[in-house]
Length: 638
Ligand code: GTP
Ligand code: SPV
Ligand code: MN
Image (cartoon, rainbow, N blue to C red):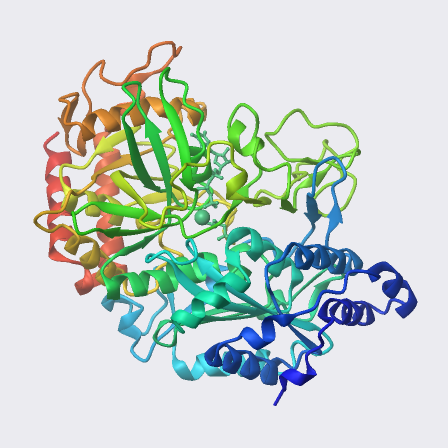
């Protein structure tokens, strides 16, 4: 058993020392480098009994050299940067203020959905009836026995010679009634530094734990393989969730959603289970505030799959005159109806872990104004003058170093930045961060958008006729695969509610939970499906997207005011002729953007039916079957 007496007061020096020793550097070299960065660690005494027990158990299992409890201070952040520089894990980007570049092992670049599991006694808690005993497309099940086995095969002694960091973190503003607390234990200083951007960490969270002892236990270790600066273990990577115990265990990957356990693991997978139990919604949604030319401000939440435009919509610069957009969150929404029947949302995160490629001064100027200070860049290309570059930012400058650290050769087909390269930046730095983004009560939601990458057949925008129809739209969402997970190629995948990789429980039950939200006295937000990604025969986008999406938001908000600017189609309501403001846009082929090809939709209905039948079966609510029948009828009689 590890005793806290054994934990050094001058943790940083010792942590750095062991990092150096592990890499075989000379003692003198690192001691010189680290002179003056020793920080006392009074946090240990502050641990509540439950946290302490979790730390002691994890230390006994992983056998680290040192344990450091994070206080969240600036001094600590500085020390982490020093440790990582000594390890060769990051390098400074001298072109900007406090910006850093990481290159991962080329085998550890995205979420690994095939190795992500949810554990429960009963498989049906996780996997819908139709897939009993088989692989499910809507989440991987693992039994408690295999869960324990997976841990015991990987964790014993995995932090030998390393420092174990303890990160108390809050999802949501500390103290908000909608917030939840977690404690992540990790041996990756990159994870600690990223968590301090993406969540609220440190002493204030330990303080809150003294009032309410409950927290989600998150254990993470990177493993001992990988490249010099990026230890990992791709062959043995596993991401485990056990909702009944409020527990997340992740091994072998340092990347994004695999390792920053507050994000997808907690806020969505465990979050969806907690939300169902407590009667609210944990969703893969951005939250954005829009002020119209009359000065009326409304908030919208939007679910698009990974790498399908959430960050862009959340920070959009509207092209329509008189509109103003402000950002509350770009990835996750926790939403709950209040006592007045208003759906209120918080962003449980504290930062943006955004897709770099495609981000530019024309597509997303607000992101560009956010990311060049206090940011960690992962797997982007580096410029000669110590800056960063990625595809879509600007014409490629001379002398680039690619994401693997090699001189970039533009004549080759391989990109300079990895397609899933990302920036990790504090949300507060966004120039259009909403005044209410940390409001303890959350912001009121007027409309919910759903969407995906649909190169053909799917109109620019369709309004659901009612809540039930909207839930069906979410259930039947599909989208082209992206680089955010381990898929290759542009296959169109089912991705209900953009949550396919993030469900913490049986998808059929999830749909029932959504349906149960509609109750008398509640102001149900209108639901819309949008598609910025429809293409013409030449493969060119039919819609300019980005800031021009404000034209769609304008119509959405007018519909929220019940303006009769819509017309019926087999799919739902679309803008009446002339109702979508396209003033000043050239060459927009409205007929192509809004066409509803009969053959396409008959196939779509068949594909959705097949998916519901094969993946959900009897767990699919009758209301959703009814909506599918209605759609088939509408399409056939079109
Ligand atoms: P995650 O962080 O993975 O959840 O992704 P996200 O949903 O936040 O996606 P993001 O906004 O980062 O966009 C991903 C890619 O889609 C980027 O390359 C964007 O440039 C591109 N994109 C975003 N919005 C639009 C749009 O309206 N039109 C087109 N054509 N591309 C877009
Ligand atoms: C996503 O894939 O939806 C992301 C990035 O937001 S990650 O944090 O890796 O999940
Ligand atoms: Mn996401």
